[in-house]
Image (tube, rainbow, N blue to C red):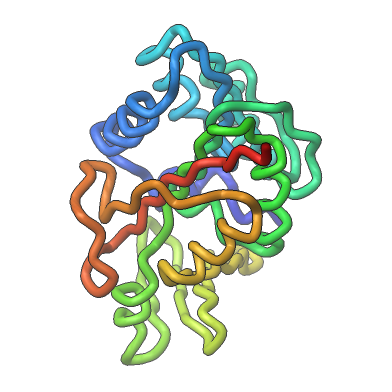
Length: 228
């Protein structure tokens, strides 16, 4: 069963102003005429927003969820394809971005290698991640269970730093996924091993300074090194 079924968009909906901040963050970093990939694009809101904000850009998206790709098509957003980012042959591009924790699922190392190899020298990678320390603090008392819009949402953190998330309805099977939480040091090591160097790190999309202990997010901007 697809974890990202139609109800996911309601359970974890973002306000439009948050999507706009994220789009603006990407738009201000894309060079003129850049080819941009939204990796794990969901229903395509950032693809559409970036095209409107920067008509000079060529923007497309890839997502592994059939439900999300179908939702993008229903919105009339073109250029969204169904695929596994770890396995897809990704066209050479100037900027790839992962928004709202779309990076860190199973196989994340292979995903990063594939994405890095497709970036042109000087190209940018933007990662939107949960900040590990404050996220882990939420689970000091153990697993968390909440009821929301008729669903039971269960969360837990294991000893290896994987955040487990499950959605359960009375009449359905449990859908679950897990996401790796990274420290800044771990991210730097992953990037460096793939020819990427960190350019900036922020605590949110308004470019507030990143604090490892208190920032809710860790927004990473990395650049593909020139192999020559």
